[in-house]
Image 1 (cartoon, one colour):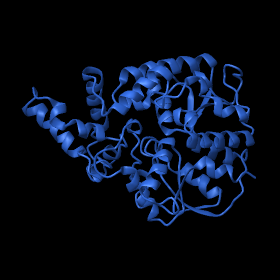
Image 2 (tube, helix red, strand yellow):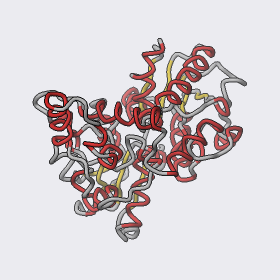
Image 3 (cartoon, helix red, strand yellow):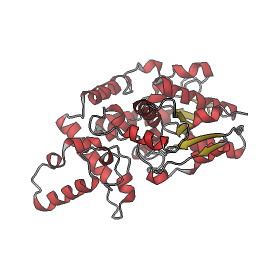
Length: 363
């Protein structure tokens, strides 16, 4: 588990093996000691919840849940965060429904030019696109949202959004220990979607997908949720979406929350190949893939210790010689845009979402 951990491999003070040993030793020999002080706060905050440690563990030890539980104690009982930037992101989410600090009323502005209406204006849709915070407000990821909608429109799929009614799914807050804020956001979102009678949801964010399809089951939420890579592959295989095949080379990054957390590896690769792509796989791919660094709520936190995880992953992509780094996650895309600059590789590697690649090949 230690060998697989992206935090440990970039000089962070987190060893999943040591953490589990410390918990066991304290439980048996010194149960009165302070567990968090023994493990260390920097170790707890370093985890990206990528699940590489759990995935490889022959004893099926659940490292991630233990770390999140200790983070909850720090946040809810002690009022501690890994940095002021994380505290600010939490406050922004409480006020505006997103950690970026953008006004909630503008959340659906990106879709107006495409003719996409919020469900409040037209609830008769084929799918609800749960956009997520980054694809709603971040310029780079808005391009992904637009590409996805254009692909759906070409396939004859009527898409609706929640617009200004949508809030963060709460996943980064929960993984960073703020369970109270997560549950508040989750319950609001569940009741909102239920109220519209939605039958199917598509996300371009694996973190939203994982949260809506798994965590929201605690709130009696049973709506079908599909990640955009799988949804688009279904449209292509059924003949609804027709693509031109134009040859290109790329490498593909398996995001942790689509890959290890949900075992989805082939649908994105199928789409790339249908579009004419030749995939030069990184040494660490599929269930062995190396994290981008943004999971576990760390998208909200500055990375101050050791090497930057995103730069290490970009360097792995550069080793393939491919000119494009294709991914399926707004967090990954954001980290890779930053990582390419940090590695001084802007002329050699271009990060892209799979929807952006496909929209250029509409027949």
